Length: 503
Image 1 (cartoon, helix red, strand yellow):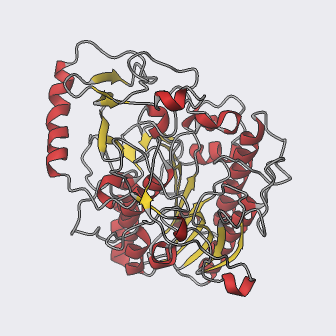
Image 2: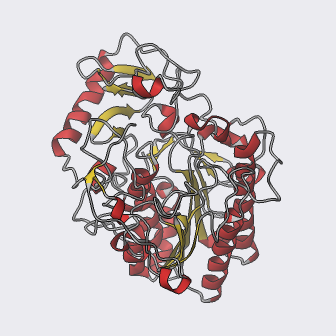
């Protein structure tokens, strides 16, 4: 697997670094719960993503691009560190093979021992901004400005709510290091009509940052992370009711419009050929959300599972003059490659004191599918081997919660954690992208995969798990800046417990 587009840009990079020119700008657009099948260019019949489809036509489509975990927080940690969640600590050991994330009551967050992408980019003078959802911990020591970002506009957690401020506070919205309001209060989200101006606010923040840094002639890294496609979905008034796909489609249409606006600004400023842009999602579509969820195309299941629908993401690389228009790259790649690719673009050597999972440039490398600290599956070339299978528990399933609605595959989408380690379920994804028909004659495949898996497990040094402990006292009661707004709330007494993760 090439680290995304390194093989394409390497000659340019060598010339650029040698000349001492200002390094290219970097924009990573990370959507929230958007599925592989949500883009017209990947087969969505509604064809409501004209700007993203044009971006793919003018850049490179990566149909075999994967996230590092089927849930929001661990996948974001992997992107910004270049390391699997089991290495960077974004996992739990409270129960076997459980996905975990960072709700308000989580005690942990991104470790101070991890090196994030914006911290590395400072070495070449980059100014970095995150616009949107952070989701790597909301306590002061975990926030973006403590981990290399120079600017932030957005929220530390998901936009769940509205909450009763005596029991659970609404999520704060930050401008840099201070809150400027809360969701459902100063930043409205109408749960009945699915209307909110948040995506438009995030778009303006991104455009303003690009304009300011271009005028200042400084290289920039924009990490643009709107969350409109995460349930409860929302869109602004101009997009509400416009999609053939309901509320979720409205949100997708507004995000597509926003991408178009960002690319148009790059072109009007004359910096499009000096700006690497990458579009993807943090995990697969949340099929559990029903009409408020997206499409994973031909792939099995969705968010929270290590089947293809939970882990394979839409991905587009765009860089006029450096990426051939209309290119399609079928090599396996992951969000962790964005870390090393961005450093290569900036002309920075990656850190050499830790294992990176997006570093090697050899033609074929495995993709590892983890749930918690359990290796669930591995993909090598066209083959995928499942060592464990599990969609969601019988207890959840019997209450109507289904991670694979309409896609039950006997013996595959199991509702108990099923160990296949002695005889893995192996699929040929080229012939069977829906993971419905395990192949029978697979000894040659297993001979290729087994030594790679054994080496990985032998050399793996897990990070200290950050997602084990919860405490209501650490919720967003009194974020920095609340006194100015008169919006500080009194926290309860600390009473920590081991977090319970059902998924």
